[in-house]
Every structure is written in C-alpha cells, then in structure tokens.
Image (cartoon, rainbow, N blue to C red; front, side, top):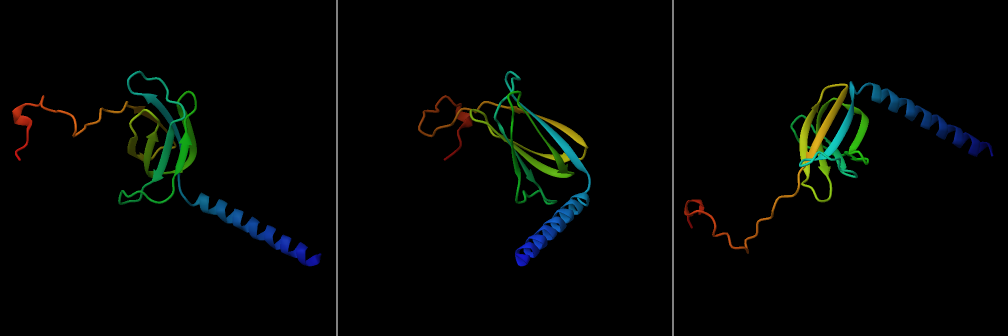
Length: 142
C-alpha cells in the first residue's frame, strides 16, 4: 500500500513539474496573436460553412515545417484561434466545390482578421477535346 501511494505521489510531482515547465516555455515564446478568419464565396460574398482552414508554421527559409492545425468554419463562415506566435504562417482553405486557397501571411499584430474569398473551380482542359478554335499564331511549332 505504501509503495503504491509513493508511486502515485511521484507521478503527481512529475506531472506538476511538467505542467510548470510547459507554462514557463510558453511564456518564453514571445508575442502571440489572435487570428480571426472569414471565408466567403468570391462571386456573391456569402459565407462558406464547414470549410477547413489549415495553418502551417513556416521557417525562416520559407519552408513549411512539421505540425499544423485545422479549424472548421461555422455557419457564418467564421473561425478563430488565439495564441499563434508572431512570424510567417501558411494558410490553406479547402471546401468542397471550391478551388483550394493558399497564401503565406506575416503574423505581426496582436489581432489579425483574414478574409478568404473562395472561387469556383475553373474548367478542366482535356487533350481529347478538339481545340481547333485557336488562332494559327497560338500554335507552337512541332
């Protein structure tokens, strides 16, 4: 009985020290930002619900680093997240029936609102269709 109590006590102490260390590490990360997203249709400005807003950290060289977060928009096309550290951030927005949106942002303000306008997908080009309606100048030499 005494052995199990001492093991539990040691576990609680280790967990407590871990939480204190985590809180201390978060204080050292520097300034944080609160991000607000609004996702709307490009052609009529109506909100897009249940769109996936994916946030990827970006390193100094502009390369996407490991990790990331996914948020979902509500019925008004809004979503938010607090506590994002200052620096570059890659934002992708995906929704069925729309083109995927992607852009890099520099997070440098305590609060930042980002409005994303999603476009309808463009027409697909097929090599099997007849495309003779081009001018002769448009054709590349073979």
